[in-house]
Length: 257
Ligand code: IPE
Ligand code: IPE
Ligand code: MG
Image 1 (tube, rainbow, N blue to C red):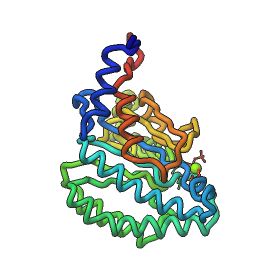
Image 2: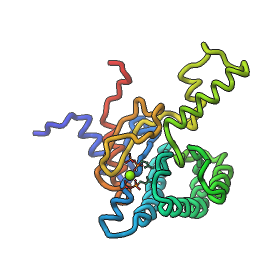
Image 3: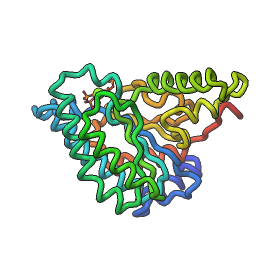
Image 4: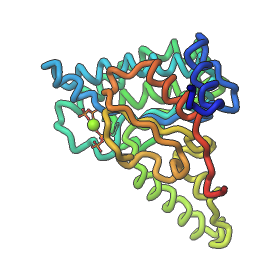
């Protein structure tokens, strides 16, 4: 006897039976955010230096971006470096910066060809000048693109983002441009790095950790969570498909009934 709910069975069958996602557009998450974790552990398991895990992780980023473009996901946000990751050894940080600079140059052609719009979320302090230059170049060249909106969270911290937003709002209040009673959810959201982006619908984390590690604290208030124990370098289009299909089966209530 088939004990699955009919709706669940339909979604699952659609997911495995078609080359594309096969889900009706209203079932797809509009915004997917990913905490890409486990690069170091992936490398350690193989007796490789941690940076090899990060290098492999970049290939996975490319695969995931391609899949989102193909499936018509409008917004993708990837956590690349947290403001707390500066606690890591200088050797890992400089290797990460090199990799980031390289990625910014090498991905540019693909980003522009795919009509992707690139955005960077985070503070600029600490990022080497040459990396910032390459980032800025792709951001400005892609600014008018109408395809996938890809945001990379680099030197990003959810609390730092809120601190920056509060500072900007207070600054306006002191200058007399905003009154206390005008401060609403929307006003706060519009002062975050993510201003103009919809909140994530689906938050994915790899490497099994059940925490949000200071990622998009304001924005994920009603995101659906999906965690895999697989490390980021082993993540693939198949994982993403599974997460999206799982998301499509959920009922979101936003506090209602
Ligand atoms: C995620 O992988 C990438 C960054 C945080 C830069 P990690 O480097 O955190 O890998 P683990 O968690 O130590 O395995
Ligand atoms: C979160 O991973 C940050 C990124 C994926 C960039 P971490 O490895 O820094 O998170 P914790 O330290 O395990 O919470
Ligand atoms: Mg980690």
